[in-house]
Image 1 (tube, helix red, strand yellow):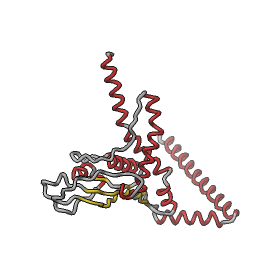
Image 2 (cartoon, one colour; image 1 turned 180 degrees about the vertical axis):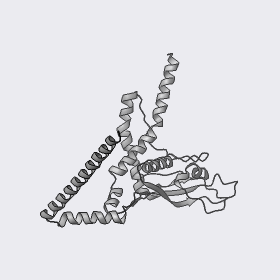
Image 3 (cartoon, helix red, strand yellow; image 1 turned 90 degrees about the horizontal axis):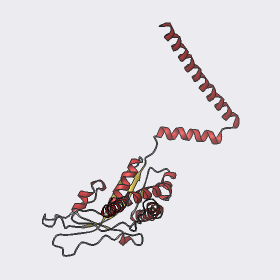
Image 4 (tube, one colour; image 1 turned 90 degrees about the vertical axis):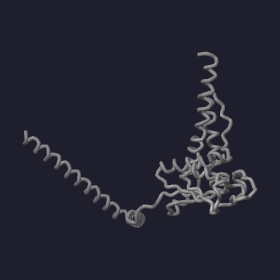
Length: 255
């Protein structure tokens, strides 16, 4: 391998590793949401089938996921591939030409990973400010952080809605001439709704009956039920063995 090929290979490794930073951040965000974040667990413990993380909570969850990913995976990548990935931040800028935004990309991927785990996810969007035709004001930058409510907005364009259809980003209520359509911007503030649902009323009632019996029945009553269940299971096993024996005799008679 020539020197040039060696450097080309090392550059390829570095670029490939940079591409997995995003998925690693998403993984840590979802792990934190399901295992450490209090909001979903508290909602489930209170008997609710969903929870909502508003912009402040969502910003904290994303920030925690970024920090966890950097702390956990940065040394792993360096140890295994001898590459130091320095940038673990999420670029908040929205590119007007493509509509792409790393924060929205992360939210969409978090939604997809939660969906794979059986949840249903959707977003709600508060429109904070938006472009009106012939307005001279330039598009504001996305300001995203955990400090203040006013600093948790994302700037989007028409191309952004097309780039992230799953997020169902809001459309402007203004009639914008097509000449200004692509430059029309909107500042939005997100909230994420995570749904896991509830058992059927029949299953809930069955559990209620079971729990009531467990905490109110005497030891003798519990022993009687246990013995009855064992006898029932034993009966079922005898029936199964008898059926197998009969089938064996029938097969033998056919030969």
